[in-house]
Length: 196
Image 1 (cartoon, rainbow, N blue to C red):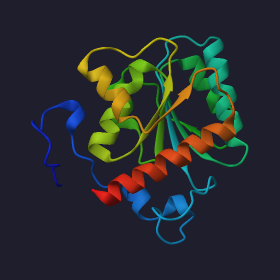
Image 2: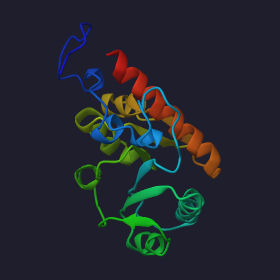
Image 3: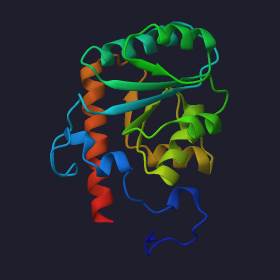
Image 4: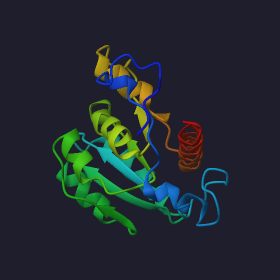
């Protein structure tokens, strides 16, 4: 692993070096198994998306989340869910083609239980620590659902937002737009990893 020259301390959370993409990305799975994944377009049929949602209650936001998952599933996108709310897990388990992992209570548990995926979508600000850990230790990029209020002012909160490969707005339920954001984030991740 190579450290960048401008790093003052290897222990600063938001200054860890970029590492090579995950094995899934290196094999070219994002390009449908055709050639170099970094230089070819992302095929939505072959992308494997992980979702982390640590919301305690299943309310209107939970219904919105289920609607998004169903919309992403229709074109055959492979998805893996880690959620905190048992009711939400049961509801997601009814969606064909979606794998629901064990119920998790913390971002650390979500990090440990997330399989190797191409990209992770973090659906809440408190879930962002899992995304940051996945990026720093396993080279899996993550997308954040941006809350209406501003991010935390602490160093960890700033690092979560700085390291995100993309943002979506909480009111946006357009699956096609989400796919474009996923595609752009993974392609940017490839370009950054290839240049470092």
